[in-house]
Image 1 (cartoon, rainbow over the protein chains, first blue to last red):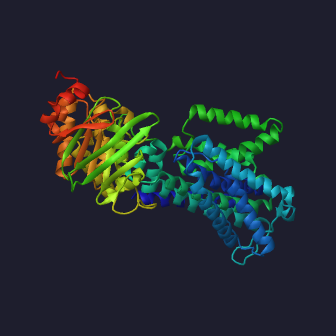
Image 2: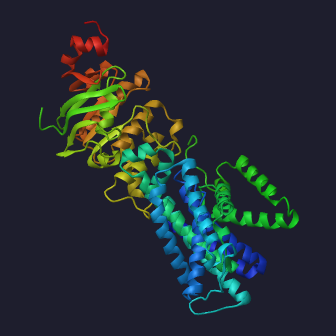
Image 3: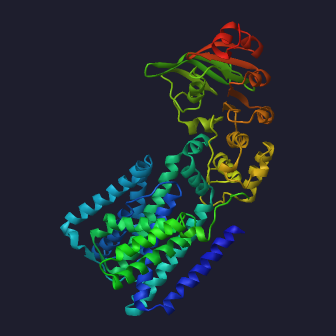
Length: 313
Length: 250
C-alpha cells in the first residue's frame, strides 16, 4: 500500500516537473535543470545525514562525474547522454566504494573535514593538470539521445526532461531505501551506534553504503550539470561548491525527499534574483534566508510535510 | 566446571595500574541463571564487557559453542547468540518504541536487512508487537523514548536484545534506575520470558533480594577476582562475601 504511494507520488512529481518543459521559458528551464542536478548531489548528503554525518566534500563526486563525462565525450567520442551518465555513475560509485570504508570510521567534524580534504585534493590536482584544461577546465558538446541530436529549444527540453526523469527515479528509489530495513538501521545509527552494534549490525558498513550512494548521486548530478552548462572546471570540486550542497541539505532536512529538490530550486532562484538585484550582497540574503529556516524549521523544509512520530501519541 | 555453554578461562584485564580482572574462570551451563554481585569497581561490568566484546581481555579464553570469542567485535558475538542489555538503557531516542523494535527485528531477521523491503511491513510489525506484548509494553508503541519511564526503557532494552536467537543474555543491572515497586514485576517478566525461550541468563545486580529470588548461582566479585561461586544461600552467607560485597554483618 505504502510502496504504491511512493510510485504514485513519483508519477505526480514527474508530471508536475515535466510540465515545466512546456510552461517554463528557456532561462527558467536551465535554472531548474541545474537546480535539480544539484538536488541529486544534495540527496546523497541527506542520505548520509540520516546516518548522522554530513559530507562537506560532495563536490568531489560532482566534479568527478562532470570530468568523467567530459573526458569520455572529448577523448572517447561518447556523446550519448545515457552512456555518459552510466559511465560517470560507475566511476563515482567505484571511488565512493574505495573511500567509503575509509571515511566510515569517522564522525562529526572529522568526517566532514576528511571528505572536504578529498574534494580539495581533486580540486588542486585538476588545477595543475594543464593537459585537461587546468583552471580553465574543458568544454563538452551537446549530448545525443539514443542517436537523436537535437539543437536549440528541443535540446534544452530533452535535457530538462532527462533530468526530471533521473530525479524522479532517484528520488523514488531513495525514498524506498529510507523506508526500508536498511534505511531504519541508518536512522538508528544516527541515534545510537552502540545499540546498533550490539544488535549485530556493522555501523561502518551502514556508513559506507550511504557514502557510496552519495557518490553515485553526486556523479550523476555532476554529469547532468556539465551537460547543461557545456563546461566543467575544477571549481566543481571547490569547497564553496560543496558548501552549497550542504546549505541545500540543511535547508531541506532529512525527512522528505521532495524537500531536497524544492530547497535546491529555492537556492537557485534566490541566488539568481539576489545576484540580479543585489549583486554585491546576494550571499547576505542567502544567509538570512537560511537563518530564518533554521530558526523556524530546525528539521528543515521537509518537516512541513513529514512530521516525526511520537510526541504524546 | 566443564561442558558449560560459556567457558571463561583465566581471563585477565588491566587498565593502567588497575587490575579489573585477575584470572577469572567460570563455566556457565546452558539454561542456568547466574547473577554477578560485587561493589563498584569489583569487575562485574568488566566481565560482561569482555564476554560481549566491548573490551578485549589481555589474556585467557572465552569459549562459546566451541569457539574462542575473546576479542571478537560486539556485532560478531551478538550474531553468535550472546546478547546484552545495558545499565543505562541503550535506545534510539528519535524513534518510537515500535520503531526501536523494528530496528532490532530488521537486524536480527532471518535474512540480511533489505534495501527494498519496508521496515514496517505487516510481518515485521506483527513480530515487533508480539515482543512488545510479551514484555507488557505494547501500549507505549507510538511513544518516543524520552517520554518513557525508567522501567519501560529497561524492558524495551531487553526486548530489543531478545529479538534475535538468543542463547545467552547478559543483563547489566536490569533494575537500576527503576522505581522500587517496579523492580520485581520487571524481573518477573524478564526472567519468565528468558526461561520460556531456554535462554541462559547472567545478570549484574546490587539488590540482594533480587539476587536471592531469581538466580540459581551467584558469582561474587571483589578486586577483579571471583571470591565465591555457589548457590545464593551459600554465597550470601559467606563471611568474606558479607564483608567485601554485601556489607551485611558477618
